[in-house]
Length: 454
Image (tube, rainbow, N blue to C red):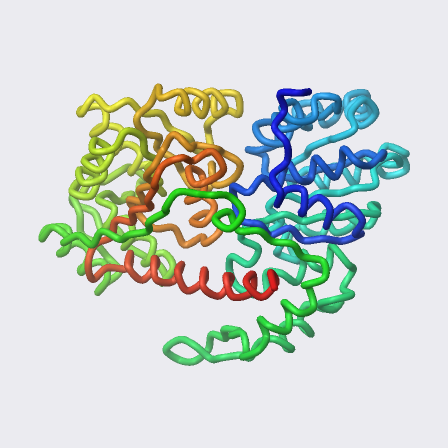
């Protein structure tokens, strides 16, 4: 116990704020150690705790942090393999004082506990990365709301709480306080903070835009139950640089890009690859800019490796780095180039088993690999990769949460060196617009969070 490091000042402040309150948001930035603060709260109270979190961090973050910082407590992650075994379910909740399940298991838990006393000793609910239940109509969101009503104390955690806009906060707030602060009806909330704006060529699409003053009003309503710390303000962190590398699209690739953009059809290798709507067209354009494209049969059609050559050169110039990619064909192209250059690497994606993921992280932190290829959706939460000093994006993501969270994998407590985020984009392409849109969303979210801090 004497070797366990003490809480940082901001972690203790967080625990002190959360412990006595029935409902709380913790929106501190990634890397500040929100998990440690929540375990401190649990350690101070006699009852048991249920944690709902992304599947990828159940064992690697929550259970591991319990073993590291609070070894006197018993924590176990739900094993879906035994979900139909009533003896396993009973033992899980009886023998542990912290049980961790994933977001989708909330529906199952309602079934398991109906008519039982399994949760009688559990009075605290923690929902990690609560944006997973922002959609009020999703089954897991509805199930989580019903489940939450059985708990006296509730805390929701996320460093990026409104990834798609201010409306994202309504359902998490409903789960916390039953509608006390932001209202009981989503449509009433939307009408109060937004105005409808007709969009599209024929003005048939309605987009709800936040009205002036709405961010300030929502922040005012949530301030009493929200705590936030920013990593740079609570820990002496080294400098972090964000920069965009604007590249010139190779002429053959430009012709293919413009053909798809103009006609939504690309004639390639004897087939016509088409985009059926604007969303698909946008995705196809980003794929073309990435250097490869999926054909109608799902097979990869390689177009150009210019951008991957640049990414590989960036990796060669650095001791350790992370490369974020979106599609399987990008992984294939990057793997070929890295292997050709004899650069040591590993990959983390949605198919990586949990035990292997943990081993990859450990090996990378011990300098076994020079770089990691990472799909943001599979590793945007929980991983500590502070051996890296550079995050390289070979293509943008539309998902703000994935973008923000991924960029904090190497910029967190434990980082000792100056670090950077490098975004690769082609000039006069959709890539720049996507990066700009992400920046706009970040600014809107930052405004809300800045107000909540004051």
